[in-house]
Length: 125
Image (tube, rainbow, N blue to C red; front, side):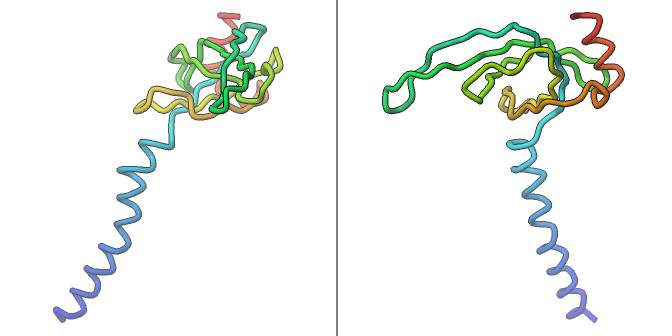
């Protein structure tokens, strides 16, 4: 009976290691909270240099964004596409609290924005 218990305990430990790794390392570093915002024409164009010294344009946004409960957060991010984000679009922005930075953004339909978020966006346009 103790041999079965030992094998079972070992199996549980082996299965818990990836789960613990996900929760303790991956999620805090590579996951984030979703916020929603509306992109108008408000961006700042900056000239940056890459590692080789070549210049390129970057487009920086500082946007009021709202989580699904309507809580506001001012987020700063770049277009990352070598041109401004098309104006008059709604975005879902993923923000990582641990690193205090935007991990990603994607265009979404107005109908995909949570109700409390869209109410806040519309009152601040």
